[in-house]
Image (cartoon, rainbow, N blue to C red):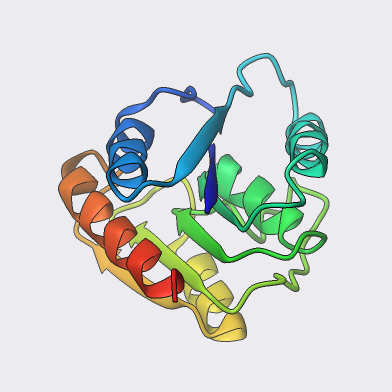
Length: 166
């Protein structure tokens, strides 16, 4: 499988969560890429950049991983591309300031981790998304950055990849 990481608005392609998950991917023998969105000024540019990348990866089984705005971008791309899985961290879905509000992910394997104390992205949005798409939802006692949950994220990501490998 080829895993594509999509960082959040105020993060970067080598943030703590991505580094932890990329080590998991590598340990399981999967290839991965972490898209750098730091020069993108809005969600449209991010989605376009991801879709351009995905066009060159169509011959592979793909997993999209996204955190916050990167979760929005990953979920949006999942409307167009068939995926092996979608793994989201506090995804910024259903945000009024973003254009896309409807999701029809082309995957059956969706897992979400969201912090109960998140003051940036509403937990209710992940509850709604998980209910609409029969996704597994983990709610952790953490804030938006999920800084205290990195070991759990890595563990759940490993289990997710093992589950969808079948």
